[in-house]
Length: 118
Image 1 (tube, rainbow, N blue to C red):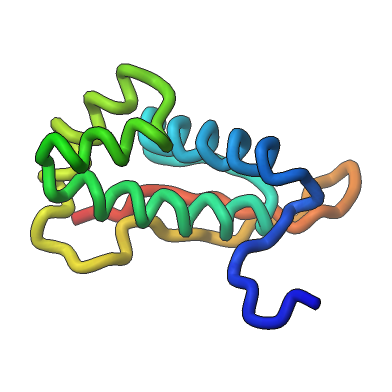
Image 2: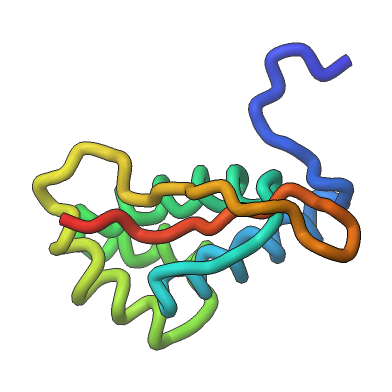
């Protein structure tokens, strides 16, 4: 039974799901906005919020923890040089999700997730 289980499986084993979410968080940090399915967007938003909260500290331990999620050197540098200081005074709500019309081919609910403005 899945009572009180917070994460969604997205139809993938754990290692594939985590790789997908890490890649999506990395792309979100690089491009500030990505379009994906609604279920993936919800899971990505959750991991991105945690990663940005870690990056706000800016110390060595935060860098080590964020490195587990962000797998691109450019995104990692941007996270600590631009995004972390940008949300320094904000307590959560760094990422917002906007629902889009369903995908044309299979009518899957789509969403766009983006970094919030200051």
